[in-house]
Image (cartoon, rainbow, N blue to C red):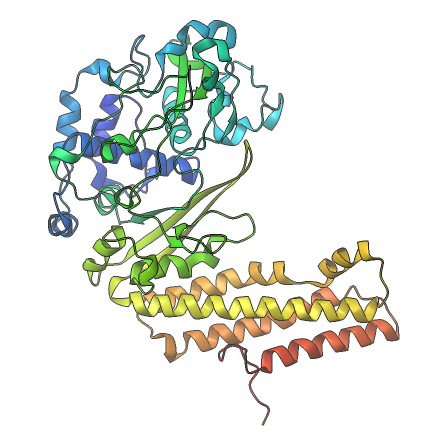
Length: 505
């Protein structure tokens, strides 16, 4: 079986992709976000075709029997070709043809279409001038377009207010741009689609968004105040046009490519109901308020949030439960293993910083054991980080008893080994979760071994930081006091049992 499959751009490619979805393990994508966007679009097609299980029992049957996606492929094959034409003059697929009159004067190079390259309109960002007409292949442009609809960053667009209205220049953050999207990943592309499809009655699937000018009523205008709307079903949600985008085709050596792009504000969603947040991992609000979807963080690697993901699968926290969702359905798979892939986009204002992605093994019959391992593993690491902070404070205060107030933070950072702890703990944590998912009980060794590894790692990273202490008696005293502080912390009654320093014989 081939390892992966590139996503098609035109109707024939999408038909073939659905038809052969069980012959490939995954999509080939340039970023995790692009893969999410293409998978969501394929699911939108399944909803639009009415090829969806009507209820949870049928969903389970679909997954267990590997239900063919031929019905969705056949529906798509019979669709009018003009609905799926990326370069249709009046209804270009996924685009806003109303921008066409402004392309000649306002269009820029296709680099603007790619979230990671646009930045804040730096002229030479990533060594590519935004007006450079270096062409982009249509399939790559289509995938980038879908990624913009799902993850587009907020901020001002390069569009002008006198084109379609003053609101055209204000881009809202895409519907997935502020939260972690979790996908249940199967052994094949087809299984991944079946796992993530939400059961729905054929009459409730909603409207597919072919283009901004496909005749749908209620599209946003840009003349007055900001207008929002709720999706009328999952087909609408997964094909939502979060951006006004227009691509200009050009022939290069006999092949159609994209050489100019316009991008501006698109449709905006109202706050979504739980039915439209099937995968969302809910956590306590940032200010202790109502539960909200888990967000990507520049300061916390995704594996540090695995306890929240496993909490969603185990329903341990009733206050955060949002009703029947993806995780409820996955629990019915019994002995089958499913990987949960979490994806998020970190950005600063209008500039993308990085995609974050991690995969957590999930076996439904092991969900309590997995949550136990993730909870205790996280607790062990958090306490180790707290201990390193205490040791760093002692090292700073003993080595530099009278620093300038402005220097205290930088001196503390010099001795604080928390970054090295988190970097070094990641592989140990992954091994812990892998062992538990494979069938080893948490209390039969994995947590004890993990605690020992983190205890050793904590001592190693502290010693490495203390090597920068000044020579002489003051430095030696600071080192001894810092190491003693760490030792006391790891022997304290508040230290997690598996991390605690064992008593000497």
